[in-house]
Length: 178
Image (tube, rainbow, N blue to C red; front, side, top):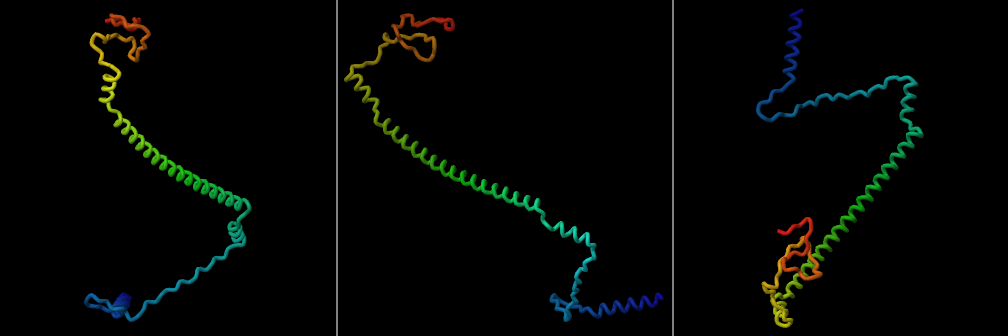
């Protein structure tokens, strides 16, 4: 028995080797034969009971509630898309409006600066001093005309009467003479 198995194994080995071709070098030749292609057989449908077939058909059918749900979902999606497009349109128009207002602001600032510089260039302080001293007879105050005083508040003073010689206009509890 063992001898028979070794003979069959040897035949298989020689058949396998004889059917193959050994090629020296780097070019492999195309074999003279094409391998057999396996054709897959179509899958046979198992026999199913009529109840299973009926359940499959009913599952594929759409009932009224499912159709209403799909219609409502489609309308809701359409409304959301329309609102999105409207918001995008509003955003685009507001962005364009902001850009135009920024350009207008820039041009107004430039015009304002130009006019301010022209007014400041038109004012000559030396000429004003000459007119005040020469034509109007004004003069700088002398040191005996200047009276320093302690103001009860740091804002401003309205003078309704002469300032006293000691320089104190009004005394209050908060401020004391030093």
